[in-house]
Length: 393
Ligand code: GLA
Image (tube, rainbow, N blue to C red; front, side):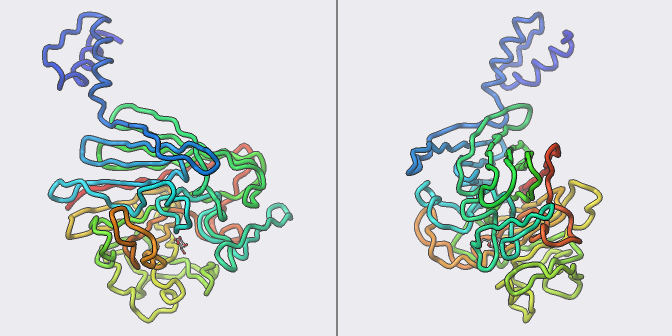
């Protein structure tokens, strides 16, 4: 490193600590490196979260930036157990549904904050065929398989590694799903890296490799309520989805195989529209989903990573923008929340008090020859990125 570069480096990282910077030699660089640690832009703190009945230790990691955003991730299910972002007055508050104990996360719940795999959403009748061999999965959403099975990736323990650098900090989670675990072929090594940036975005990078042909469709199942008032439904949140087409479903929420135009339907979110604006409309698809519980075909798939959807809550001023390289997004309006699960500080999560924006391939792709493929072969790398970016307006 030449003296000029060294000097610039030194000034940029210690300017808060001292303006009296001298760039005379290697000794100074050593000192600045130590000081850089003290002024990390995004920090990670690890703490013990609990122990499973099998004796597995579960940790919690808090990633915190300097713009008022913090996210807590637990190694059980890779669950985002808390996500705080500022409102328009600059006050950081909770915006995701969650519990405050491992015991509660281990009880049945609709995937609060969890990582979903090996296959997000439904596979018809829990069956698919690869190279002439039929595979059978547990039917956990009668008559179909949902979200990777009863244990999936949401009820397993992930190992974690921290990484810091520049304007961000990351938590890299790893899970090895064994050959035939939950009925899926191939040992699948999965990495999910959560990165908190100092611009109030949270990136989720999914990577996987297999030793046998298999199917993979990973996603994240956080339920957002941008108002931070979890006693209120999300019906007045304004949603946009950059999509001209819907993946319509049958009565069991399996795609019919068609992709239909959203024009003049309650599924047209190309311009911002409140969740509640048309959710009560007489519409066959809304009836089947008991509200919104559908996959949209995202536009501009040839562009790769791009804007996909947004949600805005006028009261708090919070705006969430979702970016992805995935072909689809499942917008779920919390239709199955029924007031039975406890909120963190008393009360229960009532109908539609959170929504999900799950970036993914279309449901049941392994059985739909015209949908983009979800097959992963040995030697291939599954790699996909989604980002949740928060701001106020
Ligand atoms: C997904 C599914 C929904 C439901 C929720 C969790 O969004 O499509 O039908 O299973 O997860 O309950």
